[in-house]
Image (cartoon, rainbow, N blue to C red; front, side, top):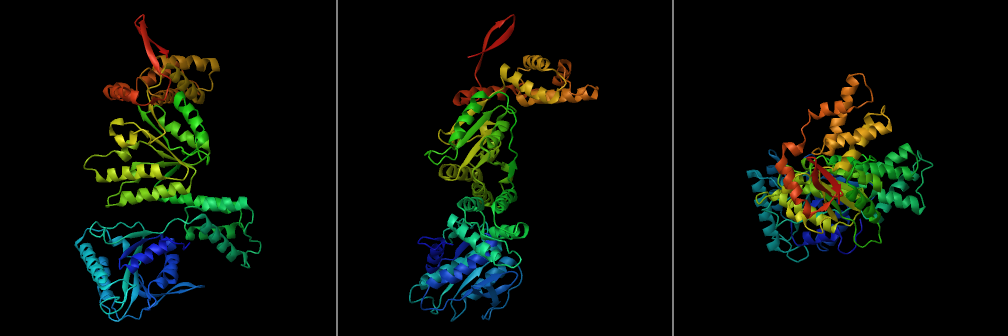
Length: 555
C-alpha cells in the first residue's frame, strides 16, 4: 500500500489524532494486511511520547494484544489488561468492553473492534445504548485533547477506537460523529508488486523449480489489467492455484484473475449474459447508430467517452435482444443488472450493494452494463427515499466513472422513468422502439422460419414471411416469434418436421392476443411519447386506404 501524502493511512491517522472513533472498511481477506499497516505505520506516527500498544477484540478470540512480525505477520496474544470477558447479547457485550476500556487508568492504546462494524446501524434499544456510549466516549476524549497534545486524557494517557468491517453503514445518530474510511482498490503499481512478491515466494519453493515471474511487458500488462479490482488475498489465491496447476506464472494466471472477478459479480447477484451473435430483425436506425458509436468505445484519444444508450417502447420489440448483441460487437462481457438484486430490507443496504456493483463492473472493464427494465430499478416517488438515493448514485457514477463501461438500458413503462434519467446528456441517445412495420415483420418472420422450417425452400420461406407480415400488423417481434414457434411444434405433432404452413400460423394466432389489443390505450400513450426520442426504425406512414385497406409506405 502506497504511503504517499494524502493516503488512506494518513487520513486514518489524522482521525485518530483528532480523537474520532473511526469506522474502517476493508475486505475480509485484507484484514491482516490492514492490521499490519496500522501497527507498523499509522500507530508509529501518533505519539512520540506515549507507548501506544494495539489491541483487537472479536467474538471468537475476545480481547487480544496485537503484535506484528515481518515474517509471521499478525500475532494475537493474551492481553495484559485486567478486563473480564463480557457475556450475553453481542451488542451489549461490545458496549461493556468499550466501557471497561474507557475506564482503564494509566494505560494508552488503540483498540480495534474486528466484529463491531455490523452493529453500527441497528435500531434496537441495545444498539442505541451502544451509540450513546460511543458519543460519551468521543466527547470525553475530545475534551481531553488529541493524541498529539500534552494532555492526552484525563489520566494522561490515550485511548482510541477503530471499528473495522465490510459494508459499513453508520446509523444517522452517529453519522456526523464517526467518519468512515475505506481501503481503496490496489493501484497498478501495487498489483505488480503483489504479483512479484507472490512470484518470489513460489520461485524459491522446491516444489516449483520452473516457476518464474515473466519479464515481458505484454504478459505483465495483461496480468495487471486482469487483476485490477481484486484484493491482495484474491491475487494470492489465484497465484497459489497457478503454481499448483501450471507450475509457472504466465497468461493462464491472468485468466484466473479474470475468473475471480467474474465470481465477485456472481456473489453480488449479477449475471454475465452470453455474447449473442444472433440476427435482430428491424431497428435499422438503432443498429446503425450502435455500429458507428462502438468504434469510439475505449478509444483513449476520444475526449468524450461513450456513455451508452436507453431504448424505451413497446415490450417484445427487440430492445433487450439488441442490447445483448452489443457485447458481441465489442467482444466484451455483458453484465446484467436487475432491480431484484439491488434492494434490501436494511437501511443503507441498497446503496451499499450498488456501490459494490459499480466497483465490480468496473473491475471487469471494458464491459457492457445491461440494465433491463430500468423503470423497476429507478422508479421513484416523493416518499421513496431509497429509490431517490439509488437514482442519484447511478447518475453520479454515470457522470464520474473513468473506466470503459458502456451502459445499455431498456424500459417498457416510460411513465415510471424519472425525468432526471431522460435529460439530454445522461445517455448518448434515447431510442423509441415501436411495433415492427411491414418490412420489419417480414424480416422477423424470415429469421424465425429459417430456424424452424428448414424443410421449406428459400422461395417458400420468403412467401410465407410476407403472408405472416400481412396478417400481424399489431404484433410485436416476440409475439410473431412465439406464433412461429407454436406453429412449428404443432407441425411436429402432426408428423410434419421442420415445416410451417400459413394454416398453422393462423391457428397459433388464435391463441395469442397481442399486447396492442390487450392494452391499446397504453400502447397509444407510448406512441404519443415517441416524438421525444430518436426512432429506432425507419418511420412508416399510413397512406390513404385503397379498397378499404390501409397501405403502409416508407417516408
